[in-house]
Structures are given as C-alpha cells and as structure tokens.
Length: 336
Image (cartoon, rainbow, N blue to C red):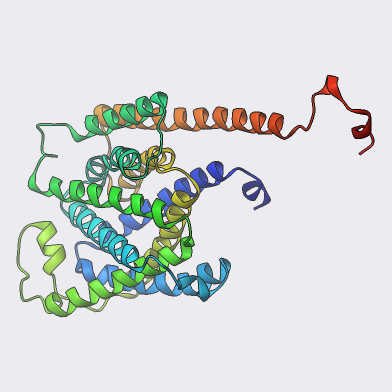
C-alpha cells in the first residue's frame, strides 16, 4: 500500500485504471456466461444490489463516511448514472449476440472520444505524441473491427452506442470528481442501476415479450427465473467486481487527466480477448493479434512517456523550491 500511496497522482490514476479494467472484464465475462439463461435486468439488478452494499460497507467508510454523499452536483450525478446504465446495458446486449472480443473492439472507440471530449469540454491539453499513441491504439481497434465482415451487423451498433455514453460518462467524472469522492460517484451509479433495473423488471420481468430468436432481444425480454446456487454465486461476485471497477475508474478520472487515463483502458481489450479464450474458447486469429499488439504498444508508450514527463516535472519543481543557488549561499543561510 505504501508503494502506491507514495507515488504521484498520475501514477495512482493509471494504476486504478488498470485495476478497474481487470474488474470490468471479469464482470463482462460473467454476464456473457449468464446471458443464455437469465434476463439482463435481473442479472444487473442483483449485481447492483451487491455492489451498493459493498460500496456502503467498505468504500464509503474508507473515504470518510456517509457525509460524503452530500453533493452539489446531484443533477450531474443523475445524468452520469443514466449514461453508465445506457453504456452498460447496450454493451451487455452486444456481448449476448457477438464474441466478447469483437464487442470490446467496437467499444474501444470510447478512449479516443474521451480524449476529444476532454479537449473540447474540459479544456485539457493533449500533446502531439499522446495523440499519435491514441490514434495507433484506435487503428488496432479498427483492425479488430474488420470492416466489411460480420462485425458490422446491427448488433454492432450496441457497443458503439455504449462507447459514446461511456465517453460522456467519464467527461462528467472529471468535472464533478474535483469535489466529490470516488465512493460518492460509485454510490449514485449503483443506485441508478437499481432504480432502472427495478422499473424495467416490473415491465418486462414476466416475459410477455419473450420469444425472439435474436440473442440480444432474448437477453432483454426473457422472463425472470430463480437462479441456481452456482449462478447466485456468480451474480454476487459480479457485484463485487462492479463495485471495485466503478470505484477504481472513478478514482482514476478524479486523479488524472481524462486524456491520460483514456489510452490505458485500451488494455482491457486485451484482457477481454484473454477471457474470451479461457472461458468461451473464442480464439483470436492473426488479424486480431495484430490489433492487440498495436493497442498494447500504444498503452506501453503512454506509460513510458508519462513516466518521463513526471520525472521532468519533479526535477523542475525541485529546482523552483531551492531558495538559492549553490554558488550564491548567503552567510546567514548556511546555518539554518
């Protein structure tokens, strides 16, 4: 823990983004695993209840208590909650119909959108080298999209919608995270999930619209059923993954510039491919591996570049804090 807390805010932000990527990809894999038996709103409702309990029991006390739930940005929190609900639901509907890796590849236009949004809406500056790295990562994602193939089906619009909402979500995170804690943002997100899924469940939970052969529509309209003991365990685990991921990614965008954090989320694409192989047997081919290498290369370059810039900033700060030059020591200062 001391190793992390002694690092710069940029380093901690990057670490949180990477840890969040692990939690989110495990969450995505679990939901895809359950997508053939349960409706989406039932799975997400159970997950969100567990995540809210974890947030209230662990994360909120960790950051100072329930007094932090008071916020001056309640409208922005609600908007942020609706964006994350829409992003999650459209993404999950996409993975019900398509391979996890392909859906993730389409979704990863989001970091480029976040970078663009951070410039136009937050006034953040992005260096030329960072733009190049982001573009290289985007090229890797496009290679995995395989234009003109089955990836460009109607279901492909679902993760694309998720990407737009996700970019807007983290632009707002950067805006309200200046004053609000990450646990505060995580609390309102899980609360929004519970409200939306409860309403949808009341309207669709009886399965009156079920029967579609389309996997995405079946996942949305399937009737609620009582989960098996194994599936209860998976849903509870998803709740912890969701709570951890939501907290960590909120912390990342609180501590680091959106344009810095966004490229690191490309690494989650490689993780999604890995879980696709391990859990679902979705083996990438040579084209897919080309995209992965470009994405990872861009992310590693950003890590290296940020490390160099941080060292330069620390050196400049050290020089500014020096009250005198070595060759100009005043007598009265020597013994202070």
